[in-house]
Amino acid sequence: MGTHSAAVEALKVDPATASLRRSLEVYYGDPGRDAAMDDFYSRFVRPGDLVFDIGSHVGDHIGSFRRLGARVVAVEPQSLCLRALRAIYGGDDQVTLVEAACGAQPGRVGFLVNSANPTVSTASPDFVAAAAGAGGWEGQVWDGQIEVPVTTVDTLIAEYGTPTFVKIDVEGFEDAVLAGLSRPLPALSFEFTTIERSVALRCLDRLTTLGFGGFDVALGDHKSLTLGRWASAEEMATRLLALPHEANSGDVYCVPVSGEQRP
Image 1 (cartoon, rainbow, N blue to C red):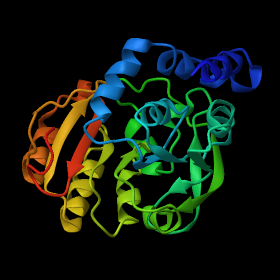
Image 2 (cartoon, rainbow, N blue to C red):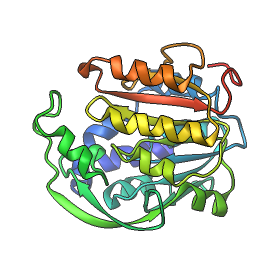
Image 3 (cartoon, helix red, strand yellow):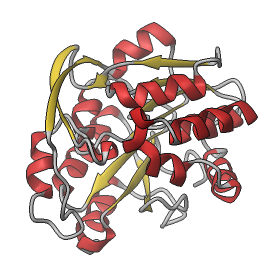
Image 4 (cartoon, rainbow, N blue to C red):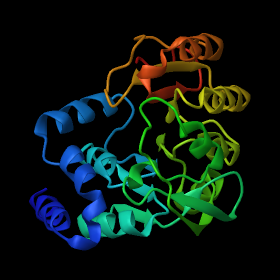
């Protein structure tokens, strides 16, 4: 991991990656945070597993999955983030970097860039509209648009194999990602935001159609499941709708059959 640390430190002082510095400072160099992530994901990921990290940003989740012994396919459309990912993980033959967005079907899509805060760049115009004027989102500006290639989860499975776990964190485009999946998987997670709860409800509907039946939620960046049991899609939808706006975001964790895995 020392090589990773050196790469991260070099990225922090590189003017070309200045807009990623805050993310690099938050997501790297905290052993306690790393240990908590590893402990959390160990219930889903075992040595030798294949994991898809869709929306990798600066790759802290890649680090956790690799520490757990998994092979990782990391999907990220932003060239600046890819520059960081290549610097940190480019020498790891167990990490495959895919420069693309993930969506409902292969092709290309307009991608809205927040150059000051790339972590909230998105392929969803609705997400940007929902953030306008919303509490906690003041000052966020999507000041650029690029066109990026789009792949699908099904395409990734056809090329790399069936993953044991998929992490989806794509700023309001999660429902489009799940529209590109046509089979159940052992487990996955998708991010939700309180400014666009309708996206989460569509995700739950899609996952139910695919055969997922157990759901739990972690709020914010905390790796701690709220319920400690697998709830139904209906109960999860009710809980997400009842959250205060200030909860802002979190991740819903999903398994095919309620009770199949211990949360």
